[in-house]
Length: 339
Image (cartoon, rainbow, N blue to C red):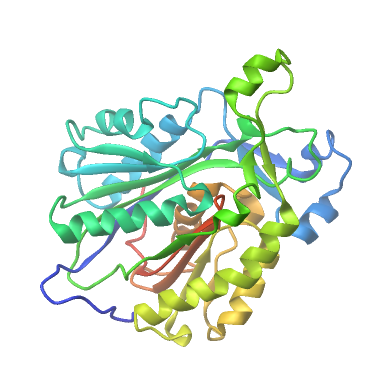
């Protein structure tokens, strides 16, 4: 474990526990290809995806978030009453108001605490983790529950050959609190509004209602080539800044957990950052697909539960997506989940 720097007079903080919720339904590439003109081989070679999970219609962002959050709290050896704030990173909570985090907090027994949603595309978990760290460092909370939860399947046009196969559903959560050693480095985050439309909801709800075309409801659209180029060539710079500000060399990284958008992008990023030969690269995308704000906590939980990574390992997290937005951070991997 590499010890991260800490500002004088601020407490050491880190992730105390982690939890995940994966829907039961597994959707293979073959099932997707019954609707679109493609093949398992074509999808896998271009994305690294073999399958993904689709939630039931009643298995909402909130319900999945509750399940993942409950496990994270238990794995942190805490109870709901110990949680001082809840942050939900999501793009697919289907109500504009109220925030999904409010119901999650109440269901988990964190009554009366501040609870809010952040919508920053696939970088959402990184933004929420950065906010949680600042809240604990600043003294406005002791323990913050951070959740990434997505039900992307309900936003997909399954006839769209360009992205019907990319996305999946699920939720991951961590508890952020004070630790003996620093476990959360500074977050490096930002956005590029010149590519605002690269990942988007294609029409707004007023336009949809005025159109009278029931079948053509708003869907998630992705300009794959533009996103690929931006991520492959720009996100390495953000990741390097996170390493620099944390005073950590790439050779010190035990685990690289990039957003699970495309395995080819992540391979390019790993090569450009020049990690050591023993660095583990998360590849949860193969069986989970792109779960947007849930992808990084789901990938961390998978690495820990399978033994591919260990508690205390030094990890580089890198989220990137709609906005286009990004967030990178050097962290210490949390305790192993147990159920």
